Image (cartoon, rainbow, N blue to C red; front, side, top):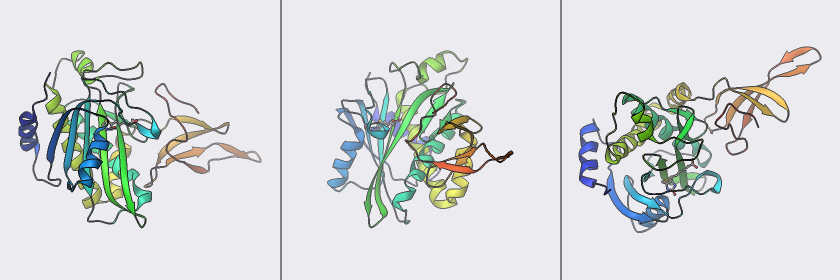
Length: 272
Ligand code: BTN
């Protein structure tokens, strides 16, 4: 089950109207982590748009320091981005949101009903299809370089809360993604269109697209024994929740902001 880089290059060319990121593709059979390999290449002078793809990872990195189990059959890809525009370290979630929105939009254009689970999960049928890990290098409070890593379940085995794209496609009467190379091209084009939206149209336009695909809007969550409703996200990546509290007998709904990683929304309608 080889990976055909020429097929990927052809798919990228066919799917591109313009080139916002000058992709330069690097393929490896096995690495510890595509994010780590890409940081190594950047330290040796690689430029924005450099891409690392691997068939498997021995120490794939997930969010919050977790491991990302990465057997053959999954997609493991990282893209390097550097910035002409100033982007504050505190705004790094905008890169993750741009990536999630861009990839989900690309897959939706293929008839695959992908949504986003806050902050960085790609979901299909209320199960995890993939995840995004953004790592940044910061100088004087500004992001100078970012590595955006994406893992997508293609034909690899998944846990109960996960789903792989091939099994989903097998249950449909169409199959729009025929191979891992095409899936990789959709992911790269999605990252490119997400960055283009963020840097050319601005964070407010990006957030409105992200919110349209966010599956958590309207979810009931419990924070410190108080019930609340998810109403959105902030440009810094926090979840906006309207809490329900009573002041004397009147119901009031102050808005609170929850940082990524401090609650889990779960995969089966949630609580904390
Ligand atoms: C998550 O925990 O949901 C994010 C997972 C991100 C995994 C991808 S796989 C390619 C890239 N390289 C890594 O080591 N991690 C990311």
